[in-house]
Image 1 (cartoon, rainbow, N blue to C red):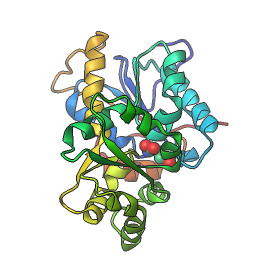
Image 2: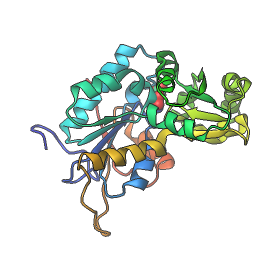
Image 3: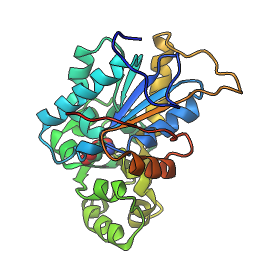
Image 4: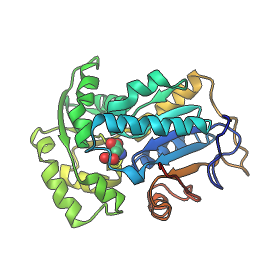
Length: 282
Ligand code: DGL
């Protein structure tokens, strides 16, 4: 453990170095779920920057600064690998994080887009994300780098993240907003839609209802988890098998309200969210 670092609260990771995972709030828990399911022996340390969400509408350099601050915090707590479980931060900060950190860093854009490229039958793929992610052009750049070209239609969905963070994922209001925001990808007749924000899988029912049953929804969560496994193996970072009576423990830290994080985190992730540590940036 690094000098001066402290462990997260009770229930946090034990002596095995954790995989650090962060998002602007609760959305990254969709990625965390997939990592827990695929790599049950790995302790995870999750940071939700709920006190500063949403990232999507903020200037890119501000989001980049937030990402670096959180990365420093997670590295100080011994993270052996960093997962940027946020498209908005991946879009603008992945390169600088990889340059600055000595641990492997993984984002969520490439894994999700690669899955969409495999799934599409027509080559018409949609991506929905925050204003920051879509405006960054990161998905278009990732699509241009694919071996087989796809026809990408991107649409920003301002407002979706706020609904998720308030715990409202199925109301009529969300549905009405989805009808309006998804109009461009419906008009483009995509057969595959990338949920290019880690909050959006929590809206999958509403998004699926609006898009119709013929459109495949791609969450980057599972694909990212497979990439995490590959990276852990490639760097020889795998945790020792956890004994059945002492499963891997996970830590949760938020810059927002801990009670809200715990309540919604338990609903969205499951019982793994027990103790939640408060973090203040001041
Ligand atoms: N979950 C995030 C993403 O994947 C961030 C959303 C936000 O804070 O605006 O983009």
